[in-house]
Length: 415
Image (cartoon, rainbow, N blue to C red; front, side, top):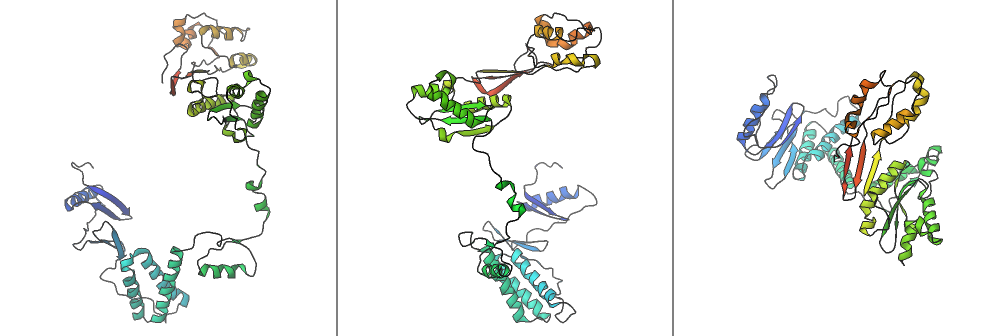
Protein backbone atom coordinates (compact mmCIF):
# COMPACT_ATOMS: atom_id res chain seq x y z
CA UNK A 1 0.00 0.00 0.00
CA UNK A 2 1.50 3.32 -1.07
CA UNK A 3 1.61 6.12 1.48
CA UNK A 4 2.93 9.60 0.83
CA UNK A 5 5.28 10.24 2.49
CA UNK A 6 6.22 6.60 3.20
CA UNK A 7 7.22 5.60 6.76
CA UNK A 8 10.95 5.65 7.47
CA UNK A 9 11.41 1.86 7.81
CA UNK A 10 15.03 0.90 8.53
CA UNK A 11 14.56 -2.88 8.87
CA UNK A 12 11.75 -5.43 9.07
CA UNK A 13 12.00 -9.06 10.23
CA UNK A 14 9.15 -11.55 10.59
CA UNK A 15 9.12 -14.73 12.67
CA UNK A 16 5.86 -16.77 12.37
CA UNK A 17 3.22 -14.34 13.74
CA UNK A 18 5.67 -11.87 15.29
CA UNK A 19 7.43 -9.05 13.49
CA UNK A 20 10.28 -6.74 14.44
CA UNK A 21 10.78 -3.38 12.75
CA UNK A 22 13.16 -0.47 13.28
CA UNK A 23 11.54 2.93 12.64
CA UNK A 24 12.95 6.36 13.37
CA UNK A 25 9.94 7.80 15.27
CA UNK A 26 6.67 6.76 16.93
CA UNK A 27 4.48 8.52 14.35
CA UNK A 28 5.91 6.45 11.51
CA UNK A 29 5.53 3.33 13.66
CA UNK A 30 1.78 3.96 14.07
CA UNK A 31 1.47 4.62 10.34
CA UNK A 32 3.26 1.36 9.54
CA UNK A 33 0.93 -0.51 11.95
CA UNK A 34 -2.09 0.82 10.04
CA UNK A 35 -0.55 -0.40 6.77
CA UNK A 36 0.00 -3.91 8.17
CA UNK A 37 -3.53 -4.20 9.58
CA UNK A 38 -5.08 -3.20 6.25
CA UNK A 39 -3.47 -6.12 4.39
CA UNK A 40 -6.01 -8.71 5.61
CA UNK A 41 -9.02 -8.29 7.92
CA UNK A 42 -8.28 -11.56 9.77
CA UNK A 43 -4.67 -10.58 10.56
CA UNK A 44 -4.40 -7.72 13.02
CA UNK A 45 -1.17 -6.63 14.72
CA UNK A 46 -0.61 -4.89 18.03
CA UNK A 47 2.43 -2.73 18.63
CA UNK A 48 4.99 -2.69 21.41
CA UNK A 49 7.35 0.27 21.39
CA UNK A 50 10.74 0.59 23.02
CA UNK A 51 10.37 1.56 26.69
CA UNK A 52 11.84 4.61 28.37
CA UNK A 53 14.88 2.64 29.58
CA UNK A 54 15.66 1.71 25.94
CA UNK A 55 14.51 -1.93 26.13
CA UNK A 56 12.13 -3.98 24.00
CA UNK A 57 10.84 -7.53 24.55
CA UNK A 58 10.63 -9.70 21.43
CA UNK A 59 9.95 -13.46 21.62
CA UNK A 60 12.27 -14.77 24.38
CA UNK A 61 14.67 -11.82 24.08
CA UNK A 62 14.99 -8.53 25.86
CA UNK A 63 16.76 -6.18 23.48
CA UNK A 64 18.68 -3.38 25.18
CA UNK A 65 19.84 -0.30 23.29
CA UNK A 66 23.02 0.85 25.02
CA UNK A 67 22.94 4.18 23.09
CA UNK A 68 26.49 3.48 21.86
CA UNK A 69 25.55 2.12 18.48
CA UNK A 70 25.07 -1.49 19.66
CA UNK A 71 22.33 -3.74 21.00
CA UNK A 72 22.71 -6.08 23.97
CA UNK A 73 20.52 -9.09 24.75
CA UNK A 74 19.25 -11.03 27.73
CA UNK A 75 16.59 -13.69 28.34
CA UNK A 76 13.02 -12.40 28.61
CA UNK A 77 10.56 -14.05 31.02
CA UNK A 78 6.95 -13.12 31.53
CA UNK A 79 5.79 -11.87 34.92
CA UNK A 80 3.66 -14.99 35.43
CA UNK A 81 6.67 -17.33 35.61
CA UNK A 82 6.46 -19.89 38.47
CA UNK A 83 10.07 -21.22 38.40
CA UNK A 84 8.76 -24.80 38.69
CA UNK A 85 11.00 -27.50 37.14
CA UNK A 86 11.09 -31.30 37.15
CA UNK A 87 11.99 -32.45 40.65
CA UNK A 88 15.28 -34.36 41.14
CA UNK A 89 13.47 -37.20 42.95
CA UNK A 90 10.98 -37.72 40.10
CA UNK A 91 10.96 -40.95 38.11
CA UNK A 92 13.43 -39.80 35.45
CA UNK A 93 16.92 -40.85 34.39
CA UNK A 94 19.56 -38.64 36.13
CA UNK A 95 21.14 -37.83 32.75
CA UNK A 96 17.85 -36.31 31.58
CA UNK A 97 17.58 -34.21 34.74
CA UNK A 98 21.10 -32.89 34.20
CA UNK A 99 20.38 -32.31 30.50
CA UNK A 100 17.49 -29.98 31.38
CA UNK A 101 19.80 -27.69 33.32
CA UNK A 102 22.48 -27.95 30.62
CA UNK A 103 19.95 -26.86 28.01
CA UNK A 104 19.09 -23.72 29.96
CA UNK A 105 22.79 -22.89 30.41
CA UNK A 106 23.54 -23.32 26.70
CA UNK A 107 20.54 -21.11 25.93
CA UNK A 108 21.95 -18.44 28.22
CA UNK A 109 25.32 -18.54 26.42
CA UNK A 110 23.59 -18.33 23.03
CA UNK A 111 21.32 -15.40 23.89
CA UNK A 112 22.88 -13.26 26.60
CA UNK A 113 25.51 -10.63 26.07
CA UNK A 114 28.58 -10.74 28.31
CA UNK A 115 27.09 -8.07 30.57
CA UNK A 116 24.03 -10.20 31.44
CA UNK A 117 25.45 -13.74 31.17
CA UNK A 118 26.59 -14.16 34.78
CA UNK A 119 23.27 -12.88 36.18
CA UNK A 120 21.33 -15.34 33.99
CA UNK A 121 23.44 -18.35 35.09
CA UNK A 122 23.10 -17.37 38.77
CA UNK A 123 19.33 -17.08 38.28
CA UNK A 124 19.19 -20.58 36.76
CA UNK A 125 21.21 -22.05 39.64
CA UNK A 126 18.87 -20.35 42.14
CA UNK A 127 15.73 -21.68 40.37
CA UNK A 128 16.98 -25.27 40.23
CA UNK A 129 18.17 -25.06 43.85
CA UNK A 130 14.60 -24.10 44.88
CA UNK A 131 13.38 -27.23 43.09
CA UNK A 132 15.65 -29.46 45.20
CA UNK A 133 18.80 -29.83 43.07
CA UNK A 134 22.32 -29.96 44.53
CA UNK A 135 23.86 -26.51 44.19
CA UNK A 136 27.42 -27.89 44.00
CA UNK A 137 26.48 -30.14 41.10
CA UNK A 138 24.72 -27.25 39.34
CA UNK A 139 27.80 -25.01 39.63
CA UNK A 140 30.05 -27.83 38.41
CA UNK A 141 27.88 -28.32 35.28
CA UNK A 142 27.79 -24.57 34.60
CA UNK A 143 31.58 -24.26 34.95
CA UNK A 144 32.15 -27.30 32.71
CA UNK A 145 29.97 -25.81 29.95
CA UNK A 146 31.73 -22.45 30.28
CA UNK A 147 35.18 -24.05 29.98
CA UNK A 148 34.18 -26.03 26.89
CA UNK A 149 32.79 -22.94 25.19
CA UNK A 150 35.93 -20.98 26.05
CA UNK A 151 38.18 -23.68 24.55
CA UNK A 152 36.00 -23.87 21.45
CA UNK A 153 36.08 -20.10 20.90
CA UNK A 154 39.86 -19.99 21.46
CA UNK A 155 40.82 -23.24 19.78
CA UNK A 156 44.33 -23.62 18.46
CA UNK A 157 44.66 -22.97 14.75
CA UNK A 158 45.77 -25.79 12.48
CA UNK A 159 49.53 -26.15 12.29
CA UNK A 160 52.36 -28.67 12.48
CA UNK A 161 51.12 -29.94 15.85
CA UNK A 162 47.56 -30.34 14.61
CA UNK A 163 48.10 -33.25 12.22
CA UNK A 164 45.68 -36.11 11.58
CA UNK A 165 46.61 -39.49 12.99
CA UNK A 166 46.34 -42.97 11.54
CA UNK A 167 43.58 -45.04 13.07
CA UNK A 168 44.76 -47.40 15.82
CA UNK A 169 41.97 -49.73 16.98
CA UNK A 170 42.80 -49.48 20.69
CA UNK A 171 44.35 -46.01 21.02
CA UNK A 172 42.75 -43.64 18.49
CA UNK A 173 39.68 -42.66 20.53
CA UNK A 174 41.67 -42.30 23.76
CA UNK A 175 44.23 -40.07 22.05
CA UNK A 176 41.43 -38.03 20.52
CA UNK A 177 39.92 -37.30 23.96
CA UNK A 178 43.28 -36.36 25.48
CA UNK A 179 44.19 -33.95 22.66
CA UNK A 180 40.71 -32.40 22.62
CA UNK A 181 41.04 -31.34 26.28
CA UNK A 182 44.04 -29.15 25.47
CA UNK A 183 42.50 -27.66 22.31
CA UNK A 184 43.98 -29.82 19.55
CA UNK A 185 41.74 -31.23 16.86
CA UNK A 186 42.66 -34.80 15.94
CA UNK A 187 41.30 -36.39 12.78
CA UNK A 188 41.08 -40.18 12.86
CA UNK A 189 41.76 -41.68 9.46
CA UNK A 190 41.34 -45.24 8.30
CA UNK A 191 43.79 -47.23 6.21
CA UNK A 192 43.61 -46.84 2.39
CA UNK A 193 40.83 -48.77 0.64
CA UNK A 194 39.67 -49.17 -2.96
CA UNK A 195 37.58 -46.01 -2.79
CA UNK A 196 40.51 -43.82 -1.75
CA UNK A 197 42.91 -45.49 -4.18
CA UNK A 198 40.65 -45.20 -7.26
CA UNK A 199 39.46 -41.59 -6.89
CA UNK A 200 40.01 -39.07 -9.67
CA UNK A 201 42.76 -37.23 -7.76
CA UNK A 202 44.94 -40.36 -7.98
CA UNK A 203 44.52 -40.80 -11.74
CA UNK A 204 47.34 -39.96 -14.11
CA UNK A 205 47.01 -36.36 -15.28
CA UNK A 206 47.78 -35.18 -18.80
CA UNK A 207 50.94 -33.23 -19.42
CA UNK A 208 50.77 -29.47 -19.55
CA UNK A 209 49.49 -27.98 -22.83
CA UNK A 210 48.16 -31.34 -24.03
CA UNK A 211 44.84 -30.05 -25.39
CA UNK A 212 43.90 -28.00 -28.48
CA UNK A 213 42.88 -24.41 -27.93
CA UNK A 214 44.30 -20.91 -27.50
CA UNK A 215 47.77 -20.29 -26.06
CA UNK A 216 50.04 -17.44 -25.00
CA UNK A 217 53.80 -17.11 -25.66
CA UNK A 218 55.92 -14.35 -24.12
CA UNK A 219 59.29 -12.92 -25.07
CA UNK A 220 61.83 -11.50 -22.64
CA UNK A 221 61.30 -8.14 -24.35
CA UNK A 222 57.80 -8.14 -22.74
CA UNK A 223 55.97 -8.63 -26.06
CA UNK A 224 53.37 -11.39 -26.32
CA UNK A 225 51.93 -13.68 -28.96
CA UNK A 226 48.47 -15.29 -28.91
CA UNK A 227 47.75 -18.23 -31.18
CA UNK A 228 45.25 -21.03 -31.69
CA UNK A 229 45.60 -24.60 -32.90
CA UNK A 230 43.55 -27.74 -33.41
CA UNK A 231 46.61 -29.80 -32.46
CA UNK A 232 47.92 -30.28 -28.98
CA UNK A 233 49.32 -26.94 -27.88
CA UNK A 234 52.70 -28.47 -27.00
CA UNK A 235 52.86 -29.89 -30.55
CA UNK A 236 52.21 -26.44 -31.99
CA UNK A 237 54.92 -25.02 -29.72
CA UNK A 238 57.37 -27.57 -31.14
CA UNK A 239 56.43 -26.40 -34.64
CA UNK A 240 57.19 -22.79 -33.64
CA UNK A 241 60.57 -23.88 -32.28
CA UNK A 242 61.37 -25.85 -35.43
CA UNK A 243 60.48 -22.91 -37.70
CA UNK A 244 62.63 -20.60 -35.57
CA UNK A 245 65.63 -22.97 -35.63
CA UNK A 246 65.35 -23.57 -39.39
CA UNK A 247 64.88 -19.89 -40.18
CA UNK A 248 61.41 -20.31 -41.71
CA UNK A 249 60.25 -16.84 -40.76
CA UNK A 250 57.32 -16.86 -43.15
CA UNK A 251 55.70 -19.83 -41.36
CA UNK A 252 55.72 -18.50 -37.80
CA UNK A 253 55.16 -15.06 -36.28
CA UNK A 254 57.46 -16.11 -33.43
CA UNK A 255 60.28 -16.79 -35.90
CA UNK A 256 59.66 -13.45 -37.61
CA UNK A 257 59.84 -11.63 -34.27
CA UNK A 258 63.03 -13.43 -33.27
CA UNK A 259 64.65 -12.26 -36.50
CA UNK A 260 64.51 -8.65 -35.28
CA UNK A 261 64.68 -9.23 -31.50
CA UNK A 262 67.81 -10.32 -29.64
CA UNK A 263 65.88 -11.48 -26.54
CA UNK A 264 64.93 -15.11 -25.89
CA UNK A 265 61.46 -16.62 -26.15
CA UNK A 266 60.11 -18.02 -22.85
CA UNK A 267 59.31 -21.50 -24.12
CA UNK A 268 59.05 -22.91 -20.57
CA UNK A 269 56.32 -20.41 -19.64
CA UNK A 270 53.89 -21.11 -22.48
CA UNK A 271 50.38 -20.80 -21.07
CA UNK A 272 47.14 -22.43 -22.19
CA UNK A 273 44.53 -19.68 -22.16
CA UNK A 274 41.49 -21.75 -23.11
CA UNK A 275 41.01 -25.36 -24.19
CA UNK A 276 38.73 -25.46 -27.25
CA UNK A 277 37.91 -28.23 -29.72
CA UNK A 278 35.83 -26.32 -32.30
CA UNK A 279 37.54 -24.27 -34.99
CA UNK A 280 35.04 -21.41 -34.80
CA UNK A 281 35.58 -21.15 -31.03
CA UNK A 282 39.36 -21.16 -31.64
CA UNK A 283 39.14 -18.17 -33.95
CA UNK A 284 36.81 -16.11 -31.79
CA UNK A 285 38.79 -16.79 -28.60
CA UNK A 286 42.08 -15.96 -30.34
CA UNK A 287 40.69 -12.66 -31.65
CA UNK A 288 39.40 -11.71 -28.21
CA UNK A 289 42.68 -12.57 -26.48
CA UNK A 290 44.69 -10.60 -29.08
CA UNK A 291 42.65 -7.54 -28.17
CA UNK A 292 42.99 -8.16 -24.43
CA UNK A 293 46.76 -8.75 -24.41
CA UNK A 294 47.28 -5.98 -27.02
CA UNK A 295 49.60 -8.12 -29.12
CA UNK A 296 48.23 -7.10 -32.54
CA UNK A 297 50.54 -5.35 -35.03
CA UNK A 298 48.76 -2.05 -34.35
CA UNK A 299 49.85 -2.29 -30.71
CA UNK A 300 53.39 -3.40 -31.55
CA UNK A 301 52.78 -7.04 -30.63
CA UNK A 302 54.18 -10.23 -32.13
CA UNK A 303 50.99 -11.21 -33.97
CA UNK A 304 51.12 -10.33 -37.66
CA UNK A 305 47.37 -9.94 -38.23
CA UNK A 306 44.57 -8.15 -36.47
CA UNK A 307 41.78 -10.71 -36.39
CA UNK A 308 39.11 -8.15 -35.52
CA UNK A 309 39.95 -5.76 -38.36
CA UNK A 310 36.95 -7.27 -40.19
CA UNK A 311 35.74 -10.75 -39.29
CA UNK A 312 32.72 -12.09 -41.16
CA UNK A 313 30.72 -15.20 -40.26
CA UNK A 314 28.01 -16.48 -42.62
CA UNK A 315 25.69 -19.11 -41.19
CA UNK A 316 24.65 -21.98 -43.53
CA UNK A 317 21.24 -22.14 -45.16
CA UNK A 318 19.43 -25.36 -44.30
CA UNK A 319 16.25 -26.95 -45.70
CA UNK A 320 13.69 -29.63 -44.81
CA UNK A 321 13.60 -32.57 -47.27
CA UNK A 322 10.54 -34.59 -48.37
CA UNK A 323 10.39 -38.13 -49.79
CA UNK A 324 12.09 -38.30 -53.21
CA UNK A 325 14.17 -35.19 -52.46
CA UNK A 326 16.03 -36.85 -49.58
CA UNK A 327 19.10 -38.02 -51.50
CA UNK A 328 19.65 -34.64 -53.18
CA UNK A 329 18.94 -32.40 -50.21
CA UNK A 330 22.58 -32.69 -49.14
CA UNK A 331 23.41 -30.20 -51.89
CA UNK A 332 21.07 -27.65 -50.36
CA UNK A 333 22.01 -28.48 -46.76
CA UNK A 334 25.70 -27.97 -47.47
CA UNK A 335 27.50 -25.12 -45.72
CA UNK A 336 27.53 -22.79 -48.74
CA UNK A 337 27.51 -19.03 -48.00
CA UNK A 338 24.58 -17.38 -49.81
CA UNK A 339 25.42 -13.71 -49.56
CA UNK A 340 23.82 -12.82 -52.94
CA UNK A 341 20.71 -14.05 -54.82
CA UNK A 342 22.93 -15.49 -57.55
CA UNK A 343 24.34 -17.91 -54.99
CA UNK A 344 20.82 -19.18 -54.35
CA UNK A 345 20.40 -19.90 -58.05
CA UNK A 346 23.58 -22.00 -58.18
CA UNK A 347 22.54 -23.98 -55.11
CA UNK A 348 19.01 -24.67 -56.33
CA UNK A 349 20.11 -25.58 -59.87
CA UNK A 350 22.39 -28.30 -58.48
CA UNK A 351 19.50 -29.73 -56.45
CA UNK A 352 16.82 -32.14 -57.60
CA UNK A 353 16.38 -32.20 -61.41
CA UNK A 354 13.48 -34.58 -61.83
CA UNK A 355 10.74 -33.96 -60.95
CA UNK A 356 11.14 -30.19 -60.97
CA UNK A 357 9.28 -28.97 -57.91
CA UNK A 358 9.93 -25.30 -58.44
CA UNK A 359 11.15 -22.70 -60.94
CA UNK A 360 14.50 -20.94 -60.73
CA UNK A 361 13.96 -17.18 -61.03
CA UNK A 362 16.68 -14.57 -61.31
CA UNK A 363 16.12 -11.90 -58.67
CA UNK A 364 17.32 -8.31 -58.88
CA UNK A 365 19.31 -7.05 -55.95
CA UNK A 366 16.54 -4.86 -54.55
CA UNK A 367 14.17 -7.81 -54.09
CA UNK A 368 16.48 -9.82 -51.89
CA UNK A 369 15.17 -8.40 -48.62
CA UNK A 370 11.92 -10.43 -48.76
CA UNK A 371 13.12 -13.34 -50.83
CA UNK A 372 10.89 -15.98 -49.22
CA UNK A 373 7.63 -14.06 -49.69
CA UNK A 374 8.62 -12.98 -53.22
CA UNK A 375 9.46 -16.46 -54.52
CA UNK A 376 6.55 -18.42 -53.00
CA UNK A 377 3.94 -17.58 -55.74
CA UNK A 378 6.26 -18.86 -58.49
CA UNK A 379 6.58 -22.42 -57.14
CA UNK A 380 4.65 -25.15 -58.98
CA UNK A 381 4.14 -26.86 -55.65
CA UNK A 382 5.00 -25.58 -52.21
CA UNK A 383 8.74 -25.35 -51.89
CA UNK A 384 10.09 -28.24 -49.76
CA UNK A 385 12.92 -26.00 -48.56
CA UNK A 386 12.36 -23.85 -45.50
CA UNK A 387 14.50 -20.86 -46.43
CA UNK A 388 16.27 -19.03 -43.63
CA UNK A 389 17.45 -15.42 -43.59
CA UNK A 390 21.15 -14.79 -43.80
CA UNK A 391 22.84 -13.91 -40.53
CA UNK A 392 26.13 -11.98 -40.46
CA UNK A 393 28.31 -11.13 -37.48
CA UNK A 394 31.09 -8.58 -37.94
CA UNK A 395 33.88 -7.44 -35.62
CA UNK A 396 35.81 -4.29 -36.54
CA UNK A 397 39.21 -3.18 -35.38
CA UNK A 398 38.15 0.40 -34.72
CA UNK A 399 35.30 -0.84 -32.49
CA UNK A 400 36.65 -4.06 -30.98
CA UNK A 401 34.20 -3.95 -28.08
CA UNK A 402 31.09 -3.87 -30.34
CA UNK A 403 29.52 -6.76 -32.28
CA UNK A 404 27.72 -5.81 -35.51
CA UNK A 405 25.08 -8.10 -37.02
CA UNK A 406 22.44 -8.19 -39.73
CA UNK A 407 19.86 -10.77 -40.83
CA UNK A 408 19.74 -9.88 -44.55
CA UNK A 409 22.59 -9.96 -47.06
CA UNK A 410 22.17 -6.26 -47.92
CA UNK A 411 20.50 -5.06 -44.70
CA UNK A 412 21.79 -2.50 -42.24
CA UNK A 413 24.38 -3.51 -39.64
CA UNK A 414 23.05 -3.30 -36.09
CA UNK A 415 25.21 -3.27 -32.95
